[in-house]
Structure formats: C-alpha cells, structure tokens
Length: 116
Length: 113
Image 1 (cartoon, rainbow over the protein chains, first blue to last red):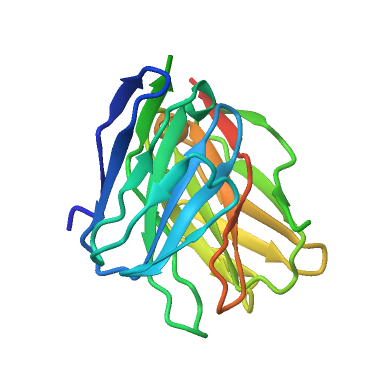
Image 2: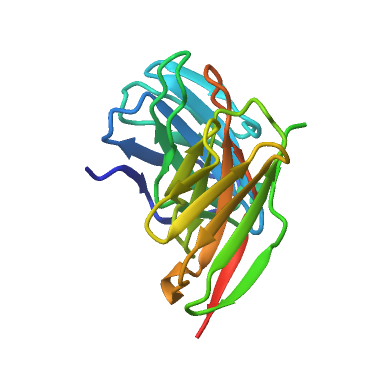
C-alpha cells in the first residue's frame, strides 16, 4: 500500500491564481481530512469528509473548497490564492465506524505552498 | 475551549539517554491519544497510541503513559538515537461519533552526539 499520497510536493503561486492539491489514499478509509500547518503552529483542520459525496468545514475553511467523488480521492481547491495561504498542507485519512471509535489518522507527505 | 498542549517546546538529549516528552489534555471524555513524530519536511508519522482505559503501553523503544487523574500524557523514548530528532506531538482523539482530533503544537527533540 502506498498509504496517503499528495501532489505536488512544492508549488509557488501568484496572488489570485488557482490550483488544486491532490490527495489519494489506498487504505479504503472512509474519513479524509485536509490540514494546514504554519511554522511553529499545530495542525489546523480545513475540511473533512466522512465518505464519498459528504464534506464539511473544519476550523479554517475560508478560501478553500473540496470535493469527494470517490472513496480514494479528496482534492483541495484554492480559488484565489492569497499570501495568507502560504503554508504546508497535509492530507490524512482514517477509518471510523459510526458510534465506534475513530481510528488513527495517517498523513501524507505534505504540499508546501508559497503564494507571492 | 478544549486543548492539548505541550510543556516544553525544545528538548535536547544526549545520544543514548532516555527522553521524556509531555503533553497535557483537557477533555476527559476523549477516547484515546496518539503520539506522532514529524521529521523536517515530512508528514506526521504515527508512533504509538493508548486507549483511555489503559495507563501504559509499550512499543519498540517507546512507552506512553496516561494519567487520567491529572490529564497528562507522556512519551518516553529509550536510548535516544540521532534518528529520533524530530518534532513530537500528541493528538487527543474525540469520543466516538465525532471527528475532530485536537493536536498539540509539538516538542522539538534534539539529540546531541
């Protein structure tokens, strides 16, 4: 299993440009998450999904959009890039079964995004 | 609000010594706790977890202790090696039926040769 994969690894955007960060997992996990990590800070949840076709906002969703058309893929879209979106973005996935415990989140290698 | 925090932002340890990294949590209803290791330029990597009905769990060179009385979690690394240099952070996993993990900001472990 490749686990959680993310592309690209690095990207530089100009203000106002758009891009999609790709995330895929091959563990058949139902939950997927997008986080951003700023220097010296903890992970902040942007969006999450509990299954194909279902997404919801996290702590810091403004400026981002997501979709979940398949179990495997969970792309994150930046429509109008701003310098405040300069960060490292991590995708994660886990298995959760309703009222049972939510299992460990496994993370991808991250995408380092700079907006100039 | 609920939070998970770490007492020491940076910990320097001599190679071969034991390391102890601490974490405080505030949600007594949390289901379990996870320690992650994050090396420079990489994603967080699962190290070990512990359920709320346990007080100790051991892995390879790592031990996690959970003290529910004082809401404290610690990660012990035995015979610390240069490859252990990284940021370590704990995650508080919510009760069943919720999704939102609570992550600490992390402690940087520096292993001195």
